[in-house]
Length: 199
Image (cartoon, rainbow, N blue to C red; front, top):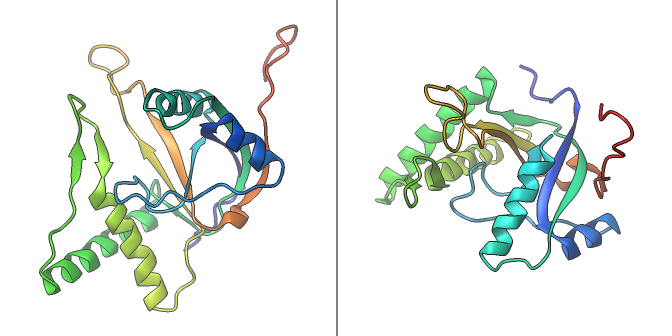
């Protein structure tokens, strides 16, 4: 079983301009630890999608969480990755669910649920998914197994691109970095020089 993701990845983080500038100058990004985070606790990135990262930052501004939307570019080495587009990782997710189910039953707790918000058909609050992924990490710790450095998942989200489409407008690959050493470098994305083609 090969868990190490074999390539470096370009990924983008939507944030306030002050955060972007501080990180580029050597600062650190803060982990997200909300119970509804889609891929568990960690630092979130949009894989190879600067525009979606910017849209996220604009949404943060609209909710009054930041003042100047910006995008931080990064180069990531995902290391040992719980890659939810591969069979072994999906099987590990099923183990996490079973362990969580047993734990909630044993202690008389309520199983967390994923929830739709407003008129969306997307589960924007993924409490169950977050709890299952965190249970996977706990299972590895309790059994002396090397931890995951990152989690990677594909999410179909948003309206259909056209009637009858199997594609959705906000589909994306999201990365959650657990081990901050996966962040190899950070940069401010350059504006393209329109005199030349963009490769």
